[in-house]
Length: 553
Image 1 (cartoon, rainbow, N blue to C red):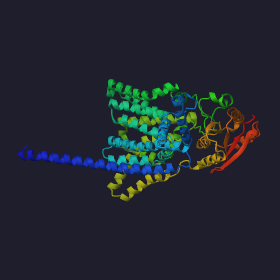
Image 2 (image 1 turned 180 degrees about the vertical axis):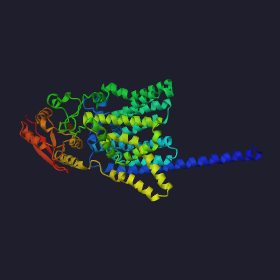
Image 3 (image 1 turned 90 degrees about the vertical axis):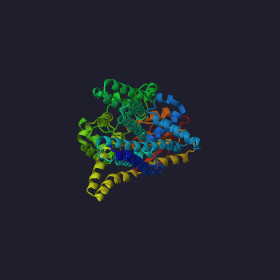
Image 4 (image 1 turned 60 degrees about the vertical axis):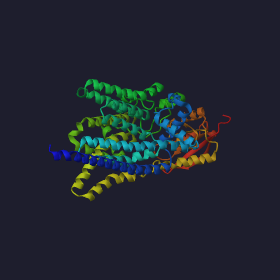
């Protein structure tokens, strides 16, 4: 090296180092600005929908009631037949409610809803950040040509304005909290092969499981994935990571199993797998033998909601799940993901992609089995699948954008962005539960009619339970099966509620209720019934409320 080189070399290296630090600082600043803008926009949208929420969802009322019982009874409530949901989300609702009470908020049903919305809003923002991180990780390992910051930003936007994410963040639903822990576990395991990452993935999967039982899939698939790569990574290293994943998961799930004495109070996977639970006919939601012979106190959990069920054949399972997936992703996300998977081609066999694909296929298989055995599949159950597909949708979107800009088709790039994001944004503006506002109006009228209704007992189906919730009353479930009117009379006589609510009108859920009311009004308890309210339903028909006078009977 010449003397001139020796004199100028350190200076040049210092200048280059300074430029790199400046570039990194600029990149971090740009990342922070993008995150603030996207998160603030997503939060404003969610806050608007949360504040103007016409009525809490059915599950929202159930979670709030669960939280109330946990607060009143402690962990012993988990051992009761009514504790059919996993406990983490209701526990956090209770903690949020306690914080609101310490700030002077009253103990009202509305405050319980706000307490739940605080958790779902925070979880929704976490889902956005984690989705962006997963998109960046996949882009980094799949294609060096893809700009990582753009991939991350598109991931934030897709998760931020996916309608299901928006609606569940504004309501009181456990799905966003579950998805937050689920994605955290996936990222923790996929990003690093360190032992502490395996432990962290197990812990996060345990938290996801305590929210919804599907969270166990992350830990299970991680263990299977590690065992499958035993030869490549070395047996000792693989065994250590498998043990740490299982230990992390058991640390969270173990106490729940010990308290409840079962894998899950919601649905036993072994029953689904072995086929001991069969899909009922479309007009029946629970077995008639349960309704006729089993005492109410002896049944495991409250009576199931009257759901419109499907009975697809084995050959139609996959098309049905795919159809629901496209509906849940508003077509654009699953379609882009398919294009992205085709684009990466052989790189789909890389280890990180294999793990994501194993998890995705496992989740779809569980949902298909649920559909076959229970005859039921909701779009929100597909949220984890959509989140696992988003990185590949982002790869396709960035690839298309780069090709258009390379050819100087900036207008075409804007059209692509509009086609992808505008339908998501417009659809996410729809108010969740907008057709259920009449239940809040009915609760208000009942409170005006009976100012002492709080704490009294109201029997109704699963939809009208929200009237009981808004009245701060005790809800008693009934089977919503008109063909078992005699059983309803027995339940009314045994449990002696102060009010009985029933929805009348057209549609699956209210089918046959007018006939049931006719039988009820001519039964042996007809003299105890007093019709006190009829609330019109926007979909036609009415919600009818009866007051029951049990004095002297």
